[in-house]
Image (cartoon, rainbow, N blue to C red):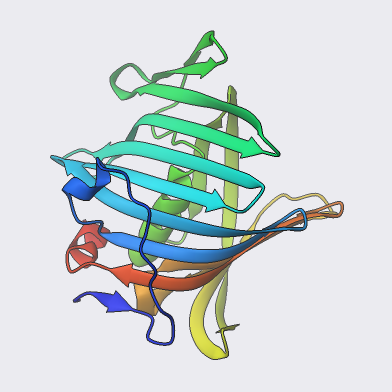
Length: 237
């Protein structure tokens, strides 16, 4: 598969850091996002940074808020996903906060770092970070897996999410129909709902995410995507 851009959308220049410019991103996707009534632009990119080592970035930006997430991870010879470092930074109405997770896959542990606090946590094998599990879901769909179960560490707490594949769904984005696969999160409260749509025709890229819980809501819609020639082989490994 060659470089692919959803044809009815135009790619603006992406604000990549100097470190990321050293290698061509395998994937860049731009989204329109809505969070608690605020409208944001969201950009995600996957970039190789070494031997079977990658960086997955997510940057949401608006006039009053900026949220940055970054996941550095590697794939071993057996295809296991091993997170190494995760960082979260947000600045809303001028108030900044953030935290980091440093992973030690060989010893199944991680260190949670927040405002000078350091806490060491034991982990089960296969535990991911809050951003990486979403990329892993995309990878699992491409491999036609029938179980979508993810353990991940968010701040200092362990989470376990289960999703079920609800089936194919035709999604309208920017006046065009996009064929997708829709997943739903299991074991939710009556007031909570999470749905995620992935596009098989675009490298199983996340096309829409919709979350609501007691009036609070979050949604992202795919605006535009660029897939580099090497992404397909990466997705199939």
